[in-house]
Image: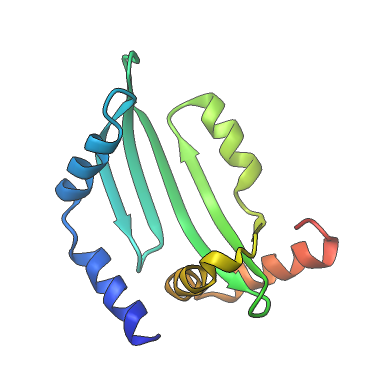
Length: 141
């Protein structure tokens, strides 16, 4: 892992969840309120609880085992192995995107940022890489 990626990983770990919630609520003012947030880069899990304006119940989303797989320098894919929610309609949507490799478009103006993000979220298991290869073989990019 590069020095820059290592620093960003430490910053992610050390950033207090309350600070993330406070900043997100400033940005989302008038749209939604972020109630809870948890992101663990090492365990590859994320949890978000958000209350949309005018709704009575908060929406909860859990993401587990996500990674970015690189076929080569120009081709990268995002894989989310498991995703679920407390809403049926969102569960149905998440079931269609989880367990598949989704190609990340190559945008020249963001090449350096995508490279850094790819390094941070690099797949640590062979299962994610084999899934990306299966999708490539089937042509489901």
